[in-house]
Image (cartoon, rainbow, N blue to C red; front, side, top):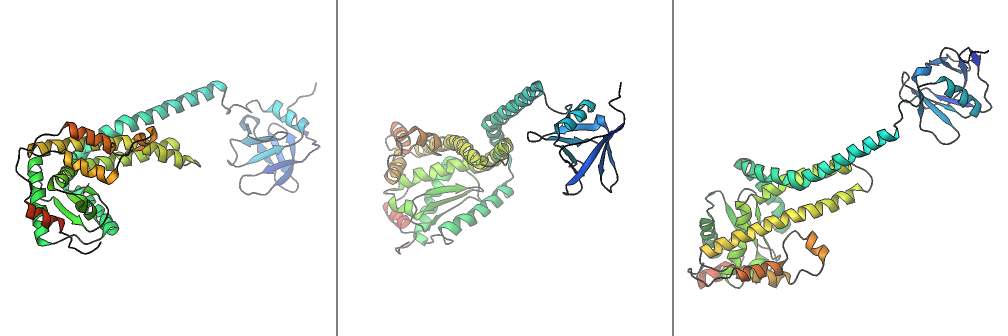
Length: 370
């Protein structure tokens, strides 16, 4: 009886190709079955692979592709002859030892699903909680530096100059101070201004910065309309919404990127996921700022409704589809106006500005065209 492990030259009808793992050169070799598999290129030094170290590598049909755990990682042996491949398979008892079983695949899939669910839960619950806890703890100097950087970007977009008409500025300062005092914001570093752009908007930046754009001021018909908008923006400052959003967005981006990786097409999934999650988070912040505005206007004996009548004149009806509601970063204007109508109270406090002061504020940017 012959010993299958006795030394014997292997005859192959088809060429056997060897890559030594150190270069890309294809080497046509012959195999010898001894106490180890010997790979010999004509005129070269034999390469010995222990049978116990040989593993099957992924390969197309009709080719047995082998690797060796003791060889360079990229070393490969490609056997195209079926008889020779069968002889090698008989001798290599650990050929498929590294390959994952069905049970192993199920375990990998299970852990992957668990990891995905964990990341989603952290995005939906953990990151918002962390943002809520950490935002008030950000040192004021750091928050101001972030606000200064944001201010540079804002002024690059809307114009670097701030409207400076003395009478208008005095009226604006009076209005802001009344709202700030009612809101309990005692930060002396808080600043507010009007930027000369036709866009009807207002916003708060980290570090106590509030800006009204001239387009909004032009559309306002009375001080209460503008005051309600400013009170809303002060609510964002009071609640640290800018810092909360910064922490939240950074954490969400990292975790969703970790979940989807850098696979082709994943950027669209990441964008869609972030849009839905962030929109929900933003709506919560906007609703809280609306509540804050209601409280401040009531405290001053004024109604919050005029501010949202102004918003409705600017935006019009926003609803119409479920998708719009899901992706909207703000509550729909018509819903906000309906809420303010329910919160409407008879005026019991003095006017926030005199007629003369209001006219001065309306002219804070001068009479020139934007």
